[in-house]
Image (cartoon, rainbow, N blue to C red; front, side, top):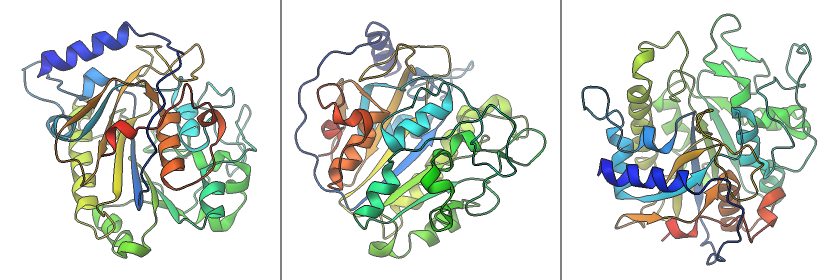
Amino acid sequence: MKAHFAAIAAAAAAACCLSMSQTASAAVRPLDRVFIIFMENQGFDNVVGHLDANNNPDTPFITHLAERYGLATLEFGVTHPSLPNYVSLISGDYYGIQDDNPSCYAKPTPQPPCDKIDATNIVDELEGAGISWTAFEQTMPTPGYLGVQFPKTGAPLYAQKHNPFVYFRDIANNPARLAKIVPLPNMDALLQALAGGRTAPRYVLIVPDQCHDMHGQTPCSDPDRLLVQGDIYVKNLIHTINNSPAYTKNSAIFLTWDENDFSSFLGCCDSPAIGGGHIATIVITQRTTKPIQTATFYNHYSILSTIEQSFGLGLLGHTKDTANVVPLTDLLP
């Protein structure tokens, strides 16, 4: 199996910077609810079928998901570094940002340079359609926190660059919207938030902190085992979601990574010249009764397009370019 996934990585390397038109996808079926788990800075071959120096699997659970559910074998980050990929995921554009600067709406006001965006985003679309949403940011201290990091000194666990909502003017200046961006202290808190079943938020973005997102900071208990720690955390998230009444037959979980760090500049699907590299995306649904693999070219715009179309929303940014940016219908049986 490791050789099979290595061949996929080699195929991705041969497909650098593609911008060709793709075959039109079938219509996206309606979804009750979507969960997006956004991990950090690991390439496809680092998280699917990867073995450590002792030939032991680093990511056994994620590899199991890849073998059991829907796997996009040619998915790419939009660009580098982290922030523009998060922004792309919720708005269909990266607005020329290629840095990890703090939000200009941060409190206290940050020293320049900073980034701010005044554009339509997924929250505007969701609320306009009466669709509930929330974002969970692990280790964020309080709902709607506008600080650049937490802890405030030393190596951060929560990093604002991984919270795209607070870069948009109409979210950062709206207390009611900020209140929907909440901390994730433990799995019990997530299960409680999903306990309402039909009344639970229909759009849920989950961002692990920098000890569990596979990127890593010095406070982590074992910085040399970031892949292992991330795999365990993903397992806990998936099991919590699966055991909640909010996870219905018409729900979908998107597990993906923001970028392949700076070891790769591959891209596709309306990405800039500096693409975000080959990453893994796994789609989990109750309807998936047998493994699915697709070699369709996807990126974060594709995930956004899938959600927009499944909820009957308009198309934002580059998701309007349906020749290059197609939804992940291959992975939604």
